[in-house]
Length: 148
Image (tube, rainbow, N blue to C red):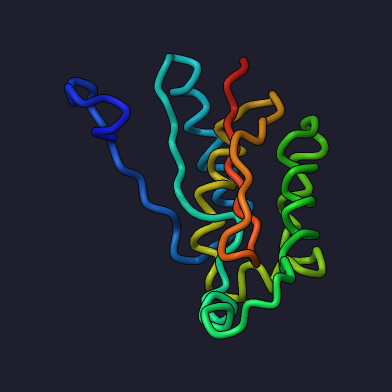
């Protein structure tokens, strides 16, 4: 946060994700935080749209140029930049065929902050503000909700 506000004159409160990685509960946390957002409080979530440590380690040894998470990244983009009904599809991220490849069971802790932010975004669609291919193999995307 020092890069965003070097004077550090804005209070910051850290909220942890739940250990259970329950998508609906994280979405509901975001909906509660939305009330603060309406009062001008910024909500930040960190994590990654892809986080499979086994694949990261493999790619250090083998660089075949195959991007492994294009389908899941497309799913995220459709859901997060869509309307309210589209955003509900995030509850089923693990049912999308490459969902569990992108975030293996028990390792979705890098996806949960994004789900909190979806709830904090209210009814407005998000915008993709960052998309990059990491190590020639993994698409990493970032989103913002700056309307409403």
